Image 1 (cartoon, one colour):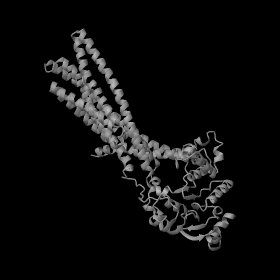
Image 2 (cartoon, one colour):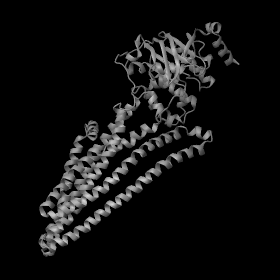
Image 3 (cartoon, rainbow, N blue to C red):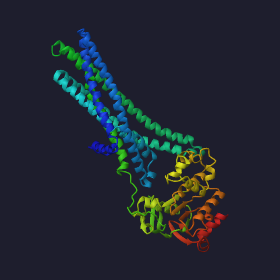
Image 4 (cartoon, rainbow, N blue to C red):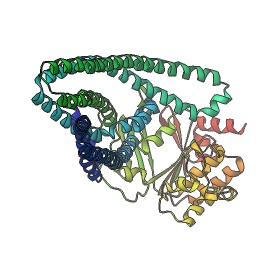
Length: 572
């Protein structure tokens, strides 16, 4: 029942490629027919050799040649079709899984290792894509082998009973193997997720590991995890191999026993020699009947495990997705309001009954000590997290009622530590506006003060920047992120410590660019250095999750002792 539900879910990804499955099935049937007829022809060949019938010998040999060549040709055509079909499923499945992963709540991504998602995107999707091909192949060969068993029953009931007895022995050995294999396999997959996660952290944190001189410590932690996983895998492979050897031994004993049985039946006139040859040549097909069943049983269990892990994400079974409303706000004017907003990460409250209002085209700065809740405000505005209490409105509409595009399509966020993808500079910029013109791209980069640097690179805007923008300096990454955000041309722009990694001269240029946008956009700025926000229309001083003072720089210097102390500390 579980397999049927999973197969139904997987089948929808085959749309547009199903003709290749039907081609595979058709040529799979032809291949199986050739394989079934070949033993009959080989038996006939032996008879013709025994009778010294040269003419018939050549004819039968030619038929064997035709069927053998046909088997290879039909198999090759079917294999090409099956690969096209499986590839189509894989691409669609991976794309949807990636898209659904991007819709997960932020806390799901933070509380789970990246390996949880990477392993499912790669290994589990690869496991799932072959399911219909494997099922089709197994059904075709099983039907043919069942037909052979019926033929064996009609030819000689003693041989039929003997085959059933041997199959039962093999089946019992396989039951032992499966019982052990799947118990260990589930543990190994869980460990693989953790290993994939630590490898991802190795790549992302390589610089810090080197600077901290923590190579030995990190290597030891990786060794512990990899050793645990590989010891368990070795144990599974070892025991699986021993059980397979037992199964193969039973099969070989079965074949030897058939010869003894055949000699006995022939000596008692219960079986003629030509039929003994035919039945002997069909032994592999008989044993394959059980092998096919065992293989598809193992494959379906692997498939069920992989598909359940995939659809835990796609079908919202385990990981929570972001939720949005259906109200569309095509062009926001830029009015914000926080009404008694409370929010906490896990059990730690960060914002407490927060109230403030932002008017359109106003430039407002949020200042305060580290940990006061400033960045959390931006996380809530962009709906990376949902409030615990209270409400947030954009242009008078509750943020929970708006569509995703209405929120994030109207807001540009420039963060303190932006992520630059392992694409070219042009591709990184086109992520936010795939139809951007050359002029728009250059204008945004000029405004972000990075165009001149890009023009010094060998491939200019087509230069690859490496994973996380590793080939760029911190200031260059931030300026590229500013250009990327400016390309969106939204009415609302959020700067979250966006100039913190810039030198004083570049910061001055960016500050000038921000000042040039004043009055035309709603600009919210989080700043550690107060000197960068003294020209804001308003400054909100945040402390312990509340706005304790608001006003211009001059007003706060007079009326807010905390702000005055913070500003004067910066001047020292």
